[in-house]
Image (cartoon, rainbow, N blue to C red; front, side, top):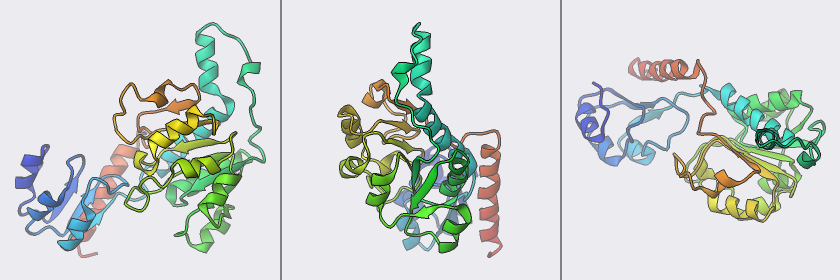
Length: 280
């Protein structure tokens, strides 16, 4: 049974063994209408579209399409870092306005020997680390949940605290899940720890960053710039101040896009649903 609107979903979930969600929010009301569901399978990484606590109380497992598009998102993060470093967007805008002025793009770091700080070292963070290592960056990461073997295998230095990572890094990229613990985990106090010459990249979820604080920090020139694929409100309003800043690169939550990511999402979510039904 397929449902495209919340009112249709209330009828569709009745009698379903597995509920697969791609767009319709799965809230407590919808979960209460599930009379026999064993699991809720979602097509992406994040769980924010599902009331996980309500599902847990109802004894319903929630699965995600783990590991899909992690390389695409890592590519996007790396592209953001390279574009911020080389000031590609500023150069492109200037040339389209008839300006040929290389000195105005300075300072531009060499990358080689600079520090990339990764907040979160899961599938995306590990894929990103390999890409950044290839450009000569020294990669450090903060993630209290990562096993010891991963740091050695990926050649990444483990940071003992978020604050130490932020203070050390020339480029900070965050890739963590969005939940109650990570909501606004990066705010004004964290940005103030960063170098004034450092750049911040977010290609995970807008809600992990206090957007108002980021706007304030950028207006005060307390960091060098930002690359943002995600926003607290999506689609973000056209009058968002971030979209008017020359040192900000913005994309429309497109980090996971590729010719393969859509089919992979369907495949993995379906495999998860089938595994549940097989008792696996």
